[in-house]
Image (cartoon, rainbow, N blue to C red):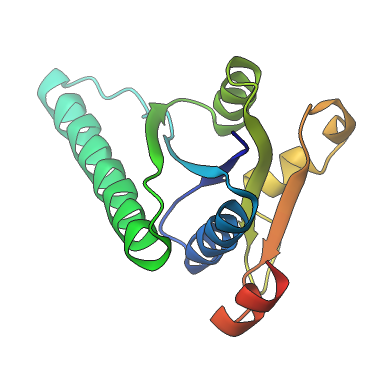
Length: 151
């Protein structure tokens, strides 16, 4: 099955990328994998504070993907796979793509204004040609109608 890997965060463009991936998956008989990455936390000398910060980050990430999965199911009928990982985004994404040959594309949302985010900068940089799947960058300025028309 053709899987679209979508990275979700708090940004509005992440929701746009998810909608695009869902529409493509429906049209191609594929599926969607939702990934959220929890950045590594800085070490804090007080163990209890560190544990609380890490727990809050995990709860926030789980809430993000649960909300995204609910929206996806409601709008497209697709039941996505959900992954929450802690670490460096590019490394996690590469590992997921290498581990799952069904992943057909990496779908990222680009902010409507400003510099590209870390993942877009990384995956369109010097080693972009080494990725075994295409990277789909979905402009954050697209309307729902435009996404539906383009996907």
